[in-house]
Image (cartoon, rainbow, N blue to C red; front, side):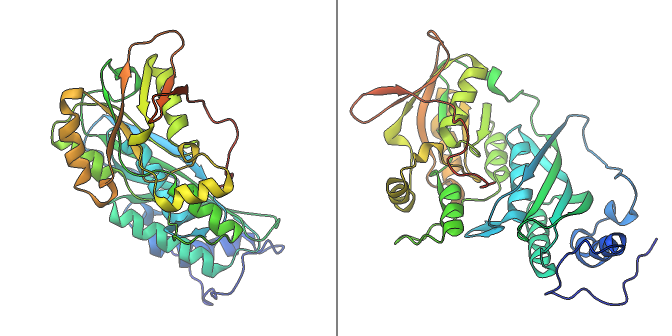
Length: 346
């Protein structure tokens, strides 16, 4: 069925819930905003579901929701974040991202111009990562602030290796690699939201992780586990992995890379960069004898040039935990972040 819209949507027009206009407006958004951007053979059928061709029976499935505020921030926007965040979750399982669904919840008052910018960003990011957006849904809710837009994305990927990747595979002596500097996404979003200006410009690290993961796997690096460092940052990810693996981790604080801008901002605002969210960083657990080669591979990428060996996995002694050691040799346990230092950053 072809949906026609004789009067094009205007850029400055806002999304409304005027009586009797909901269905017509949704059709117009579908025809003029979503279908042109996400066009592919699966979506063009306008069916209740997508029939997918998968090269293997070993698939990985994930879902996530994105509520970041503001919608646009240095280094990205909610659209780029939605595609990249879900694709990165698939990559952490050793899977190549292939298909996404996208559900939009639009608050009455969002402009068509903003929506088109976000959809265009999703289109660019999906094409960059060779991902097809094959299903979706749109709902409009009552006006609250006139600024909210929420996106849920679900993703399907195909595994690149038969070796299981996950916390239970972590072995005593494994090297813990960090793919880059930390804290940039959370601080960049917060600075934009609060109109803070710092002497060093801050930009989110929002970026796809699959190219780095693919390079590791193609070079036969036996990756035991990976985790992207989103909500709760590096520290929370390490605590969660230690508890799941039932092992202790020893982390060298001095080895963790924090940019000058992020470090200064955290000192001023009283934040600990180890707990600030990232959207383009991950930790990988590999055998000690492959750590040097794995670092060389990561450092070939612009997003991995600051990759570092930050610690090792040890046998469990008492309660499984992640311990961080400062340059003076003092050790302290890391903890799981309760609540959010910075709400609405992803």
